[in-house]
Length: 376
Image (cartoon, rainbow, N blue to C red; front, side, top):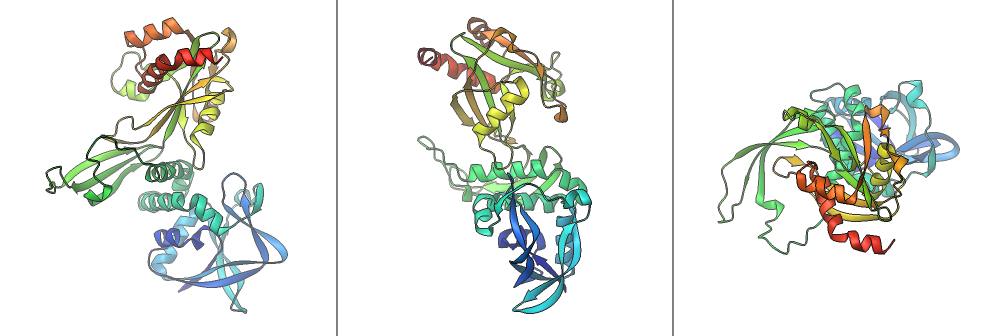
């Protein structure tokens, strides 16, 4: 057995079970001379020296398989095991703890108070459970460093699933069968980088009450995203962006640069409206006023696991607001355009707006434009 002291997210039993499997027995322990702070903006625990204080955690008694799983998981974040002295029921014990391997990873990030397992579990626990599941799946195919570089997008996909779990449609029409009427037979993560592809075999209860035969399907997984169409009610104009879209290119579109609303992925822990405002700054240099919710919807639920949150954002759109922008670190190359209202309607009718969120947002704006103009 390997004895490992944990003080943070692995003290959350559901995450620990996903990561370590069943080959672990946990025992309460204390680490004197230290405290745990909360990393600003992320909620991650940060262990720092603190004279006269003590950290309550767990010593994991892990078998060989569980130790290997724990080591691989922690290696994703640049951590390895180092010797450490703790106290178990007041008796000193030499165990090990996961600490940063590199000097860069060891730098203490900005913190904003004491870290609490209960608070973290409330805000991040369910997200981390889904994220840990994908991390452990990816570790079967990729080295830990590679998986760790993708953790941000893994966490975003995890948040998307938690958000959908917590959402309920009104279900005013439809039989609306529950999720429990679907029986998963097999699931396989076939591809995983910025996007992921999952192969699923399932059967489900049919509308006539009988169970279906096994069905083999593939699902394209993406983080949830926001779109925002900036509208200036005083000048009666919108702003759209133009950029290369690989979906259109792969479809053999002769002009794969599409007109779109501003859009972007929702980061883990981020509210959709915060994402919308952030993306407006990054993609068009715009500071938005009021955000008007258009819709929350699946863009193509037959094969894409993603929800879009679309908004119309009130903005000041003078003639000189357009230009080239985008997040350089993400390789974005974005050109913005001011479009007067009459021309925008012509573009919609003529099919120049070939992007679903733009069509949906324009149609919403056609319904609500008079009200927005009247309110200033």
